[in-house]
Length: 287
Image 1 (cartoon, helix red, strand yellow):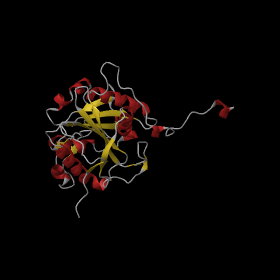
Image 2 (cartoon, rainbow, N blue to C red; image 1 turned 135 degrees about the vertical axis):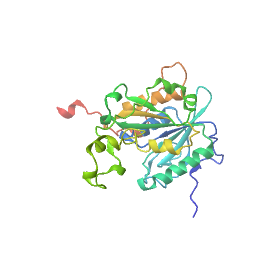
Image 3 (cartoon, helix red, strand yellow; image 1 turned 45 degrees about the horizontal axis):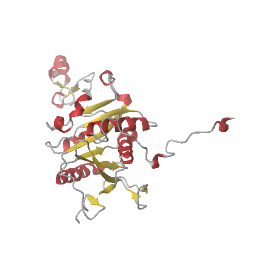
Image 4 (cartoon, helix red, strand yellow; image 1 turned 30 degrees about the vertical axis):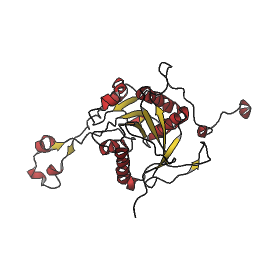
């Protein structure tokens, strides 16, 4: 049985994605990328253009505040948002995570859709565990993780203003390679100097810090010729609306959204956020 189409438009005339930018969040720590895209969709009044096949995601459905009384789905596409340079941005709103056992299938289908739609670039949003930072990561709360594609600087020139994600520190003790394992050879024939200096290997450096979910897999899966850098924000679990607003302003600046010279985007929280983090209590409750 053939798979359903990965993208299903709402209109009879499919949107033209060619030469546009795709804003792609990951379901990562504190859901900050999801909150950011939700905030951008609300602030820019973007219409819902279609759905992506949710077969590889955890099933979810909810109320939808847009027109028509529709149902909110796991993977939705909104746009286009107009850039100041005349380009377009399409926003993916992901409401549930990808099932772990279906990760590779999801990444393959996502890549096929991005390639067939002829997007010119992808900007990935992700969040990382605040507690996993080392001294090198305390310079700023937000970094960018470069794409393997050499033309990323041309596609997103303002990313150069953000600090690069520092490499992780080396481990305190190098890992012993399997070729020199003391389990596979008698200890008496393996000199101590060999064990300590001769055949030891450091582990490969990860491309993203803990908590960033599918970010490194996305960057490896997407075509090497397609710019796909990531914005990485260090966060902690809690009321993360402030993190989402800060990241949304950076995304707006990087992508050139909104009117120039107005001090950033005018952000408007979605109606669905009302009451999610609780409401204010009147003083009479405590008297």
